Image (cartoon, rainbow, N blue to C red; front, top):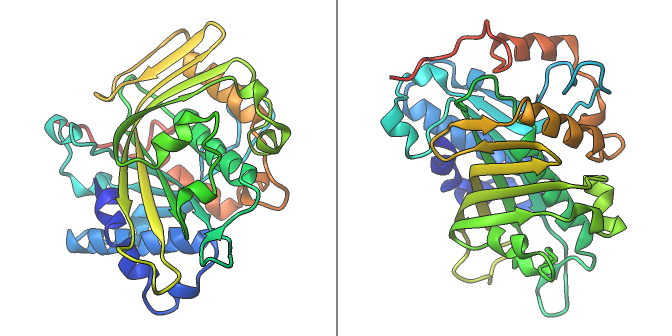
Length: 309
C-alpha cells in the first residue's frame, strides 16, 4: 500500500528540478524512493531512510541451494516497514506487507520524425522485463507458510509501451500494460528467440502464472516532452511449476508447495537466469552491505519480525 501511495507522486518528482533530463533506470528508482520517504515522513517514522535499501540482495550469500553456484541477484529497491506497527489480517486484505520488493525498468528511445519515441529492437526490453518478473515471482525469500513480502514492478516509458514491447505472441505483455486486475501466463520459455534468452537464459519446463494489479499514470497530452507513461504492477498471486515441483503463493498470503518446491524452482531459476557483465548482479556483497542486510534479513530467524494480530 505504501508503494502505491508513493507511485502516485512519481510524475511530480520526475518533472521536478533536474529529473526532467534523467535518462537512467537508477533515476526512476531514486524518484520513487524520494516519494516513499515522503510517505514515511508523513507517518512520523523514526529514521525513515533506514527502512530502505537499494540494490538489495535476494540472498545474503548468493546461494539458492547448498553447494550451488552463487548468483548475486539484487532487487532495485527493498523496504522493511515493520516499525510502522499497523499491520493486521484485515489490513493485509488490501495488500499490506512487511517487506516490499521492487524491480524497475525505464524504457526510452530516440525521437522519430513524427515525434514518437520508440526503440527499433523490442526484444531487449521485452526480455529484460520478463527477467524482472521471474525474479520477483520466484527469488524473493520465504521462510514460513505465510508470505510477508509484496512484489512490485515499476515500468516507465517515454512513449506508448507498444513501441517497446513485443505484443505479438506474448499475451502477458498486453496484460502488463492494461489497468486493473489481470492474469499473466509465462510458459514455453525454451522456445523464446536468442535475443530474449540473452536476458532470461535457458529455462525449459518452467511455467509461471501470475495474478497482477496494474496502476497507471500518464499525460493528458504530450506537447511538452519528455512525457512519461508510468505503470506499477503489483503481483498478488503466484503459481509456478517445474517438473514435479510446485509452489503457490495465494492472495491471502498462504504458501502451499510440494516438498521444497519453492527452493527447487528458485534455485533452478537463479542458476539459469542470465546476468549482464559489469552489473551489480555479478558482484558479491561488500562487508558493510552484508552487515546491513543481516540486520533485518527476512531469511534470518533472529531478525525482528512483527507478529500480525
